[in-house]
Structure formats: C-alpha cells, structure tokens
Amino acid sequence: RLRMTDDTPAATDLDALQREAAGCTRCPLYSDATQVVMGEGPRDAPLMVVGEQPGDQEDLAGRPFVGPAGQLFDRIAGEVGLDRDAAFVTNAVKHFKFQARGKRRIHQKPDAGEVTACRWWLEAERNLIKPRLILAMGATAAASVTGRGQGIMKRRGTFEETEDGTQVLLTLHPSYLLRVPNEQARQAATRDFRADLEQAVHWL
Ligand code: URA
Image (cartoon, rainbow, N blue to C red; front, top):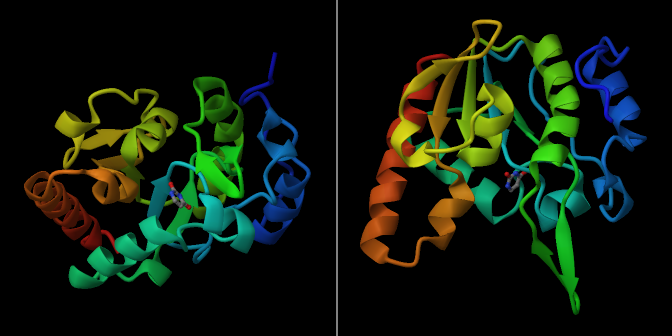
C-alpha cells in the first residue's frame, strides 16, 4: 500500500519540490512519461488552477497547460481578464498517462489509485502556495481536491470547501470544450466555463 498523507515532501520551496518529484515512483506512470510536470506560477498566488494531468505537449515541454487545452484556457482567461501568470497552474496527476498508437500517444484517464498517489504532490504544492481559491477543472481535479469527482456538470459554477477550509470553485475541463461534438452544446459549455473563470478573477 502507498503511504498517503502521513508524511509530506521535505521540500520547502518549489524548485526543491520539483527535484524531489523528478524521482517519483509512487505510481507506475513515471515509467513511460518523459518527465514529471509540476505546477508553475508565483509562490504567493492567491489562485491555484488544477487540471487533470499533463498531455502530450506538456509531457515534452515539462510545463502544464501549454498544448491545445492550455491555449483554450489562456484565450478564455484573457477574455475575462484572468492573468494566468498571476495564478499557480498545476495538475492533479503529474505524469502523462497515454497509450502508444503508432507514433501517436493517446491520452488515458488516470485511475483513482494514480490520482490518490499523486495527491501527495498536489498537497505539497498547496502547502507551499496556500491559495485562497482552488479552481478545479474537470472530474479528476474535483476528485483530488474535494474527494468527489462525480456530477461535475451540476456542481460547476459552485463553491465547495476542502478539509482545511480552502474554497474550491468547480468548473469544466477546457479539453472537454474541445471535444463537445455539437456546436450549440459546445458554445453553451464554453459560456459556462467563461462564467466560472469570471468568478475566479475576483480572487486574484
Ligand atoms: N490537460 C490538463 O489537464 N493539464 C495539462 O497540463 C494539459 C492538458
């Protein structure tokens, strides 16, 4: 069994945490991923944005939300005046989980054990940053941060609280917006996402 929160990483700054995480073997995902992708942003950021896991481009770049989902996030954040650089942007899971299909690497959803194992690193980031608001994007982030991943469509746009009393705003995952096949449904989901980011702006 994995040890959960009975200890925390020794790191007292983000660079040391990154070095510690680079050697992580808490779950099997490290073995196929290129590198660990930790969060980035100011140490005193009042807002922490949490996604699912690095995608193909993030895995190669070593930075969160630089691929298509990140570009969509940046665009909508820009529209509502949310300065991404003022937030700490990270993921629930720090290694890319994928299935190789020819030259392509197809994203795979992390399972509950992987989310739980990696929660250790997310908590370490939370302990260093101490954000006032966590914006949890999608079911995996919701599961990691609130303990419950179900019902995100109904919960989005609402605030919940972590065990330590930190406010959590739930929203959709930007890559979900990229996948909605129906144009009208996609526009509606995008409006919802934009409205949620608009709420988060007030915490910056
Ligand atoms: N999707 C995520 O959840 N996180 C990233 O960093 C990129 C895509």
